[in-house]
Length: 461
Ligand code: SAM
Ligand code: SF4
Image 1 (cartoon, helix red, strand yellow):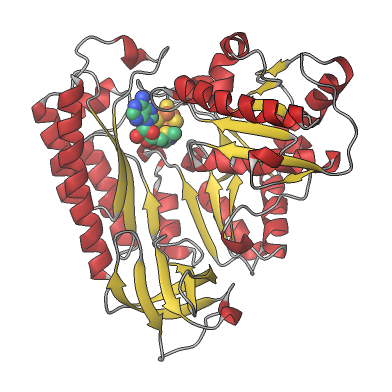
Image 2 (spheres, rainbow, N blue to C red; image 1 turned 120 degrees about the vertical axis):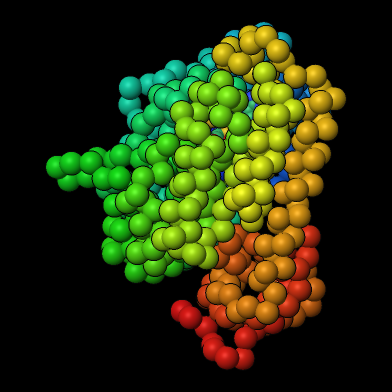
């Protein structure tokens, strides 16, 4: 039985976040809703009155990983109890949504289990535990939208408060054969534009220069606006027109099927769109794409890339790949390699297919053997690495606009972010933090670039 909470003016909150950018955003919002109760972030779970494990269910052994982490948190809680301190343990996110009851059965010392759609109810749940003890589980898909009920002081999430994520769309109706998202995050919904603009204004007023709009299918966005509906390019125009201090805009993750011409044109016409797009393709084989229920062919994907490059020649493309989907042959895998050679990516994520219980592909025959998946993944990653190195090398000798995000590790060094999302290191005055400066790129590192401030021009803002 969990300990009773005693009112406390200052309580430590430690959130462990696994998974995608949306989980990073959700963790920040959970901190926002708990702030009025006196919770503020602490760096270590050892000093936390409440620990939240925000989980991801996308790939294998998700539940195992959660139980092993919970074992560690339980020990921390026991040690704190010996010192007379109380600790609430909460599990949030997609594993909580998918395995809520089993989770409590296997780890009864967990106090709260909540899904991605109910974290606005956290204060209520904490109060219920304080009143009556026991555990609380809330994995509903409530009728009320959490976005209408979140506090209005959304905090930026990273890089010296200069960059932030902003969720504009959630859930997915596409039902790809391999994916748990439609089951854990629910049906596709878009936030009303007015609420997005208000949140973006607050973020920019607090110093944010670059926003990444988030959604499981962000380019399917269709949010209420005045008497109608706004699409993603329309939302981007509104953000540009109404918030002049917002300098950079990105969005993730997009589906090829929703990559409409108006959005492609916006990459040419809207100056705050960065020349960068993450557009997952998963496979280059039409047979596998069909089995995955992706609803486009490899050539349709190539065609979208061609249109994007026509609209914005300097656009850098990244993607997601799955190797070893059930039924994938050597020939299918070669089609994926060919697509990669044809498109040339600036970077990409690639994964071995992992059977997710309850998804259509999990029950299909012709599962691919583990050693075959491993071989294919290694070959794909080697090719993608070559392309990433080539992309980074192509920037040597160019001058790039870099958002200065903070102090570097070496004395006198600054860190920044390129238009293509690469970390960039160069020497400069810390007074430049928060500005966009011209940097002459000189050195490619494995996952970043080195350079020096360009003499040709000063800062751009
Ligand atoms: N909505 C995005 C899209 O349509 O591509 C992707 C969302 S998912 C959170 C991120 C990536 O995880 C996917 O693009 C896919 O490559 C990978 N992924 C999802 N389910 C997977 C599975 N069962 N096995 C391996 N990788 C998976
Ligand atoms: Fe999952 Fe993306 Fe497919 Fe939706 S579109 S089911 S989120 S992979």
